[in-house]
Length: 346
Image 1 (cartoon, rainbow, N blue to C red):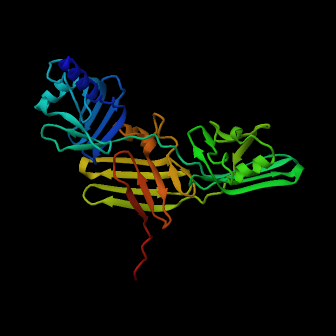
Image 2 (spheres, rainbow, N blue to C red):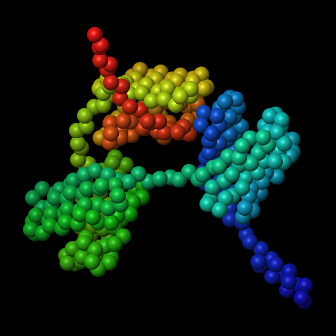
């Protein structure tokens, strides 16, 4: 009986490893990109691109064994295993390959001869809503919503027919990809919540739907109200901007002010240059995006896809000092400054 009790105690005490899930990524700029996807079914989608050697390994359903602290690859020793065969072609000892699960949630990929590589989980970030939205019912109601992008909303609802206006300049909001809710309206002392209760309204019904066309729909215990973003004219960027990483990369961007960009990027270390003289751009007061890169046939998009890049990550931030920051997939952020026309010395 003691033996049975001890065995049961041991089984009950044994920790159960949580199944790893999600997308993890890591890189050594200009040298290596690694993407690991864990669907949670005991396999791993392995994608390793050694750019400097032009060698890529893709194993979409590699078998894994998981513990609380690590992941191993039980089938790599067998001929016919995708990851094992690929590593053996590179003269690697497959028994040395494993993944350590770190205490901070990141992963460390260990191998034979390559430096340890840290991978972090790719999060699906929700872009904070920003800008001024307005909607109205003529002669009855005006609504203005301002989103500063800090997790609050400036709410101004003017019910003209009743001569009643609600103004809540810093109403707390919670955002998802498709909606906005008001987490504090149920509490006494909340500006919007208190005002609505005075009107005998059920605050739990109030929310905002983010529509696919970029408009908002304000839902209450009355008719839905559609709000559209108030556009502010943006001065077109112009001039020549340049940035570099010595001996590695040169970038030159020319903006003629016609909604396009002359893009010239020379990755010297890899002997690769991308030249796109009329790349379409979309400008706001704070950023520049590339609306056509997702389409086959686009100069910049096609060139980046050849380098296994996620084109959706490429953008430019317009900094407060007038410089630009080029953001990409896997490369470090690159600061570019405006090139001044040289004065003629007599």
